[in-house]
Image 1 (cartoon, chains in turn purple, red):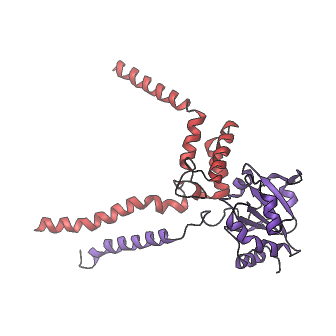
Image 2 (cartoon, rainbow over the protein chains, first blue to last red; image 1 turned 90 degrees about the vertical axis):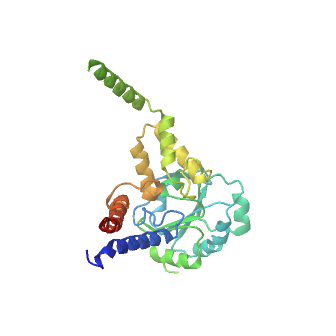
Amino acid sequence: MSNYSRYIPLGLLILLMFIIAIALARPLSPNFGTSPLLDKALPVFEAINRDNQTITTEDLIGKPVIINFFASWCTPCKLEHPILLSASKNKSVRVIGIIYGQDPNLDTFLQENGNPYEMILRDPGGAIALKLGVSGVPETFALDGDGLLRFHQAGALSETSLKTLLKNIGVKE
Amino acid sequence: MRFLLTLTTLILCLSCSVYAQTSDAERAQALFASIRCASCQTQTIEFSNAQVAQDMRAFILAQIKQGASDDTIRDALRHAYGDGIFLSPPVQGNTYLLWSMPLIIFIIGFFLIKPLYAKREKQ
């Protein structure tokens, strides 16, 4: 074995350690990275709105729509609320809210912070959340006019992420 | 010989019956222990109090009650959350490298250590 070739395994080990270090250094996103549902059709579900009407997936398709999981007790939800209010002023997009879990203080929350939602659906048992791969609140999905999921974000929306969202679903600001 | 054959058959029958009697609760427990909590990540849903973990446990129990197989339940969660929802990554194309890592490290280690022994033998 030549002088240099005996260092090949050591070099490979260092390279391997380097790859592992890079892999471990990647930030863990709350929902393990990209949603596997992106660019796919919205999973089929049924929900009850605040007027106790049944809403199906089909009722949400046809126009670009933002689906926002939220709760009144959630601080990041309050932070992103102004962003959703500004999105709701855009007539080309619908903003639908889904209350994750039980939320007795919802009315107070909306009175104090404004209501950006065209419709609010209830998801007390988390059935819709589990179909969409939700990890917590707030979490936002957006569908284009064809009903394909084009945007997903776990955590509060920012002005930048709203711009990306609208761009992804083909809506002008 | 006959005694050994009878004993082996008896053990096999017993182990099969024990396997067949795996209760719904045991199935649920095994699933809980293999699924990562989506909001806490370092925990399984078995011990997590997060809302999503509670909902997942309720979902799994309901599915088992409805007669769904473990694979069906796993597929439903994989469809929404991806492979990252499982503590143990499935053996498939994009994880072959991961699963073969112990062997790769062993081979590299072997070639690292081998020259040291060769040197010692020469001395």
